[in-house]
Length: 186
Image (cartoon, rainbow, N blue to C red):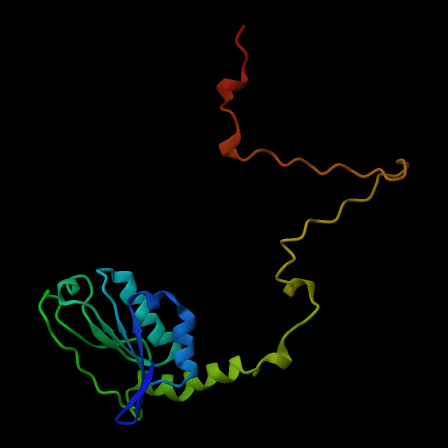
């Protein structure tokens, strides 16, 4: 859902949707200025995920949780550069966090993010570096480690169709029997 208030474009996400990065990427593609995320968990990593989305996609992010969970991580507002602009007290009591969403902010963190980082990321995603990509270079082949190595050639004088058997790799340490188990007692 996208809506506009006083010239700022806003999006909303609820609880479990925080686990779906494509949703937050889509809000960036839709050019929202702020995403409001409301969660119902007492989970500090969830707040870091929210802060990461605000940083990664260069928009403000309003993070809200029930007051009883505020002692873990309180509700707050993340700036496009990733810094918390405002947070409620971490005392378990209801409170409000308030911050201005100023698209012309002179705050260096916000200004650099909105004027340089977000436009650069969009141009990079739209092919800015396509002409500079290396293709058909085995060092750049992402699947080279998934292919089995070629079979070694047959030794000189071997019968036709003879191949060298693959080397057996030693058993990993956790699969080896202890030294005492290998000795036979007589």
